[in-house]
Every structure is written in C-alpha cells, then in structure tokens.
Length: 115
Image 1 (cartoon, one colour):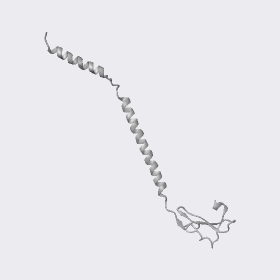
Image 2: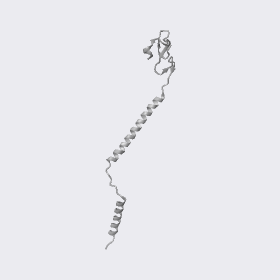
Image 3: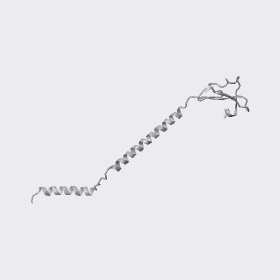
Image 4: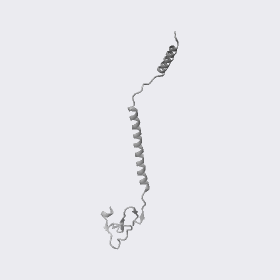
C-alpha cells in the first residue's frame, strides 16, 4: 500500500530505514516511511520480531489432533470389521442350558443302573 502511494526516498533519506527496509515518502505526510522486510517492524524497521512459537505449536497441535482422530477411526473401523466378519453364534438361554444339563445327568444315571 505504501509502495503504491509513495515516492522513493532521495539519496540523503535512503539510509532512513534500517535492516534492509525500503524507504518511501508519502506526499500527504512528507516524512520518510519504511516498508520492512520479514521479521522486522517499527517506524524505521529497527525492531527484530521473533518468530511466533504459538503459530508453530498451534499447527503441531492441529496435526496431532488429526493424527489421533484418524487413529481412533481406524481402531473403530477394525473393531467393526472384526465383529462383522465373525460368524453368528448361537445364544443358549439359561433354561435351555438347564434342560441340557439335567437331561445329561438323568441319562448318565439311568445308563449306570441295570434292570
């Protein structure tokens, strides 16, 4: 925005901006203005701006969340596939189990006695 509306500084003002910033004069202000390079800020680009760790950690956190969600989905999918692939099992009720055991006992008792 400054570059589009500004005039390049004169040779005497060229060193106004520090750290490789580009100097421009905005006609309505008539004072030198700087367009700073990456990681520099301030009216003369005199301040070094440290890289923000919060953005990096936010991206890492987002990646970790996506990986965890994908792993959970894969585990859930594996469980579903396992249960679908299992043959259906016959469920025996308690009364059927009781009848089977009592008939087994009765038959073994009668088989052991002779008439």
